[in-house]
Length: 144
View 1 (tube, rainbow, N blue to C red):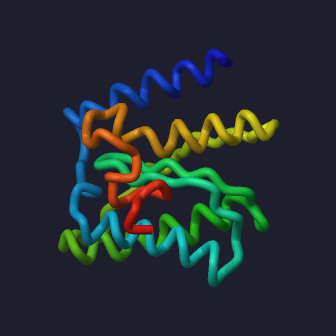
View 2 (spheres, rainbow, N blue to C red):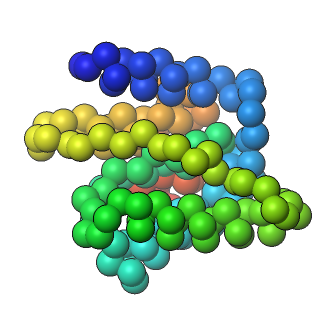
């Protein structure tokens, strides 16, 4: 694992504690909206092939193969979901998502499978559920 990968994993485990920062994604309406947008951007807009995702209480992990520039994907997902979330939260003129994101190019099938597992096991690692499929806001969810 690269040092950047280790730093990412460490930060991810820290975020699992959800002890600081906004926890807006705990709201099922917002989490559902993010999941719906991820699927819409794949199925309707054909922006990417979606392999895995999880909406945690304070962040989102997504693994996809892009069909268009990453900046366009990010803009179409973050823009729409931010407007909807801010409407639900009755917030105006404030950022919902952080400007930055962590992206990584997957270089092999084995790495892809490892990342899918990592993403889908995030709620288990955070102690939120016992099995990945129990987390409603995930590609592993039995709710589909």
